[in-house]
Image 1: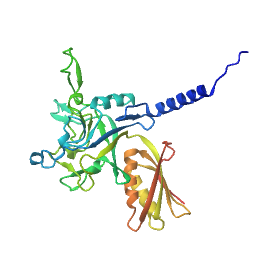
Image 2: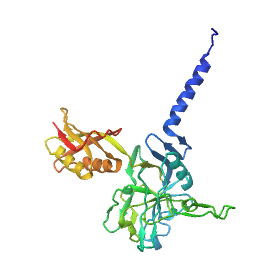
Image 3: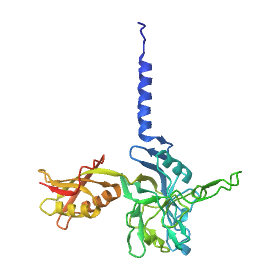
Length: 322
């Protein structure tokens, strides 16, 4: 039998290739300004808070029409400008296996607009606040002018944009998503078919309903990381510490979990903490975590640690464990 000699250099090369392949399977595709994370079903994009916000305030009166656009898009009325183009994001979502939805349109027979349909996504914005990283749901950077409150958290609809004639093509029948030309990525308007994503809230049909939330917004030009994540089902394992036992925390958790359609349980631990295991889609769980950070009236939440785990489907309701 012939012996094969493998030197240290060859072993190192093999290990490096293996690590690269494992990394590639987790990320899928990355190009600095845009990363695809297949396992978590999300995109991570580099960008900044739009420096053009406020340029036309005399006319717009502070109103914003877009949550996200690309460069040379409507930067003067967008909260975030990302370095990736709408086309790159569209193609990245294809790599994630996300199907293009149906953009908003008009039903001639019923004589009424039709809302967008498609896969739901959650959007987060992260930036450096001094030495600390701050991460929020993107809606927190927007205020509702009428209610004077932060915009309601939503699952954004990926419609893929309306299709229009490709004016740069030699083929006169060629069609492309309008977003490829406008670089409109996330619209705050429900019926803005030019963007890849739309806001599903009926309130968005009102003119000039949104403006930037100055109470939370970092200064213009601040570098940010934008995460666009499929609203998938997961399990969340949560530990809450503080004055959280003997104050109705478990009942508070159960009541809100049931209202949100979340299954799982809440349990007091011997160390004084409350353990919560909750299953549902990410939008529901985000809403529950927001409530748990405040707790019931007589509670005091000092810290909340949440760990994402695979969805099991084993819980059929939300209970209290002793």
